[in-house]
Image 1 (cartoon, rainbow over the protein chains, first blue to last red):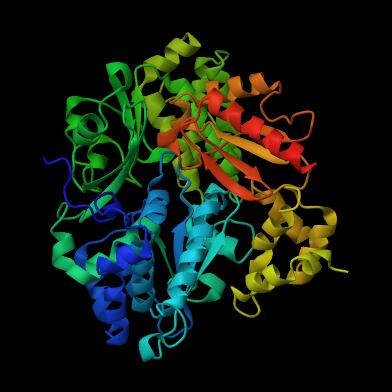
Image 2 (spheres, rainbow over the protein chains, first blue to last red; image 1 turned 180 degrees about the vertical axis):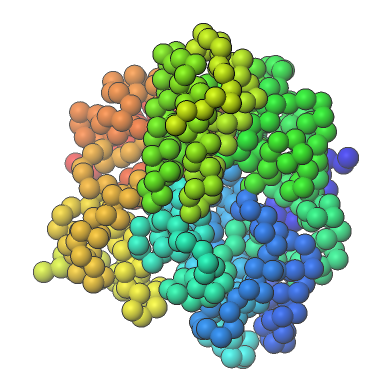
Length: 429
Length: 169
């Protein structure tokens, strides 16, 4: 397996100065956007290209992007494109690099996407902490207006387009797409019941497509080079490349763009340089704090990182935020950390998540302090299982993932911590 | 008299223009940021000003301030050093970094220095996991990332902030 295949999203690492407008233009920048708008290319054609490319949502869910676009209700206007730049999953830091270092390709991607769904306004929802990136984007949007690439009646057509940035203010839940919409409308950032789905009733009650930064940063090149080019990269069902955010107990943490289906071993050992102090690797969390904890075996290291293969080893690809756990890390400590996060970030709307994360955190805290008993671990597992499938959004689901898999897959560590045998299967209410 | 509107009329006009007619309440979060620009927190008067501009009740605006972690309704440090000690950063020494930093400054985690200048606290993931230990500096000027930090670089920053404030006095 070659180390670096073609880079699509992190092209700034190959083309010096790509962050500068002139250099992006020299590289053929905005040619595709100009072409589709001035030739009044049929919107359905663009939707089909993206659909046929096999591009799937990079925010974590992996939903086919072109299909989402096709759901947009054409009997209700106006349409909106909302870009999810709320990147807040512990272990994820890819959208930040894309927006910071390859901003024009990102902007061209969202502009073509807006045209494809017949939207005249784009809102980029950035987490409040990305204050500097928002300021940079505001300048870049101004520049695009000046260059005649944004504004009214573009290239003499009747198509108009504007981009607005909108800053969140520190709430993980707002990365959930309907909570994000609520947040722009300034209700509390809490998820909506679905259906209706956003392509039918979205922002300000209008049809809205919400896509992740990384997803849309692919679009300009897909429309330029065609669906076959993109679907030829990666695997059959997981097309294209993916930016893997590698963090934790590894020598060279960072973002690595690789074809879908690259095995863990390549990421962790070839590119990541292996484990700090060459210690043994113990576990992988492939999808950030929301992840199942996968105990590492040779088979796991050879598993291709794509949407289809991960469930086979007891995990999910999610947003591909790969957190590496070595033998210095205790599982009781680890789940106390993830529970601290989810307790803090639960929005409070659904009782099982609000109460469940609160009590799970109390239990993990007690166990981690060394004051827990086997009963506490059993109760913890019981609460975790009861949160499951009872909440409007996925946060509740995410919160119990690490807890359940840590206890079930590393029971010894919990028994050592509480000093007694844990009995599984016996759950009391 | 709406002081906020008076002080920032140009900015507020620009903010309101971002959102469609009838959706003025969407401007609340940008307006809270604007109000915080002064001293890193929103006062009761400012809550009322924002409510008036957006046609909401003061209580509704206050609930937004309460919901989001970057909004504050109490005066604490003018500068907030917010160290990420979430899982990925903690795996790279963020907890120890936070404790050491506080110890050196002479406060506990979450506390503010006696001169009212600096609050140091632990926060959730800031999307800088590969550059831990790292923190963001939240100040009246906005938010700035400081990555790949050591105790020395962080203390140096605090020294600079103090020097800057001394000059301004």
